[in-house]
Image (cartoon, rainbow, N blue to C red; front, side, top):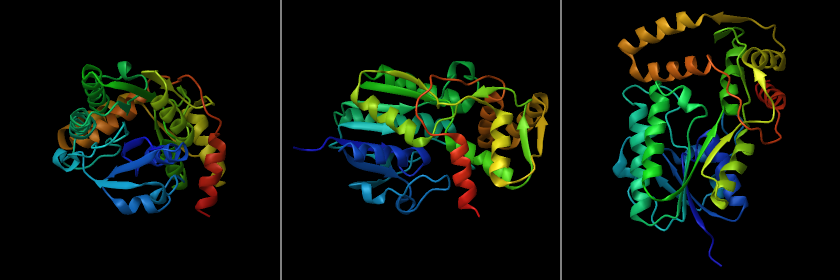
Length: 294
């Protein structure tokens, strides 16, 4: 019996690695689309697993160079994409990566008769659509829904890798937060989210909002990070109006940074609590992160 074949785009990222692992453990043949093959071979910065041995094929491609992804979907049954711009890169925009890069991949999937395309977007996108990073995701979602292919759009709240950024700020001894830190959210571990992603390949759900099993305020999350490190908490709350002023100035000199900063400000204004799933606890993640740096 031939295995079903899945292409995982963004396979070397935090979520991508867990998705590779989950697909492989369920008996799929995994083709990884990455920019750097070597990243698959070592554990990630937020404890995500090395997955090189779980991948049957590797395609080297770059979302900013659509031609590099040509025929990536040849012979593939399912495409899963978490390919996206997660941190500022000079000269690279969310439009190039989140929208047009994924559009090129979708066009390739359609050309090769792929059966289903699964995409990771943003929870509460409708409340943050003015942010370029979010609107780029949603422009691709519109393309995906209009394409005629079977699809699923998964909208997680925040990854534990995002909490890893908070952890690293706590390591420096001083944390800066936009707003008063009282807004609530339920971040999700990559392994728990990967189960949702692979389930989406096997069921009929098309629009899936998802978060982790625990709800925290931003302040609570950051206090946990300091506690895991054995450090006294030092958190400075930056008023949102100050953030808005910084955002305006940043937009004059660095558009990629403005997009990421705009997203950070937007999520600091609202609650982001999605339907809960999974079992992995944030305190355990912080303790594991703390043990890894000692």
